[in-house]
Image (cartoon, rainbow, N blue to C red; front, side, top):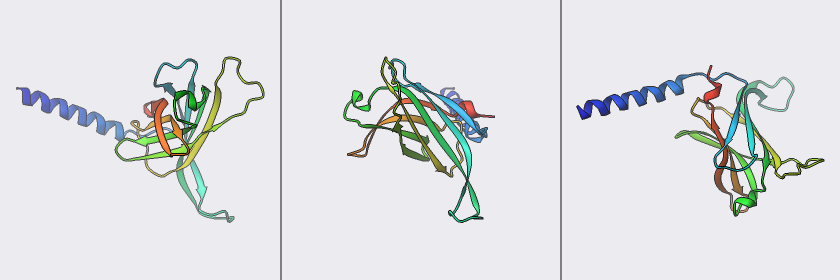
Length: 163
């Protein structure tokens, strides 16, 4: 009886995971990136879109379709507030398959917020893999001197992009 129950649970989980990967995503799509830990005010969003990119800069060059991801995060403390970090990086991952890292850039504001934090933005538009609802998008801490990627500060999956 116990083996049948375990087999049923395994099959149910396997079918659920297969279904999540088989669902197609709707583009363009935006998701809210949720704070991983309780940090006041931080918030973010990610935009996934299909982009047509020419192979060369020559007029009439054939185009290829890629998926792009852009991240906007606001009210972010300086990365050094979390330890030995000096920047944020955008990070996308199809678990167990592939991941992408891209640099985030702080935005200089004319009138910074009186309660602190600043906006950071970045994008990457060379994704050729097929994204799934299980794809993870996050804003992570990073140390540019050591190239060490730190923990996620904001994160979400693409489940909200399923048609």
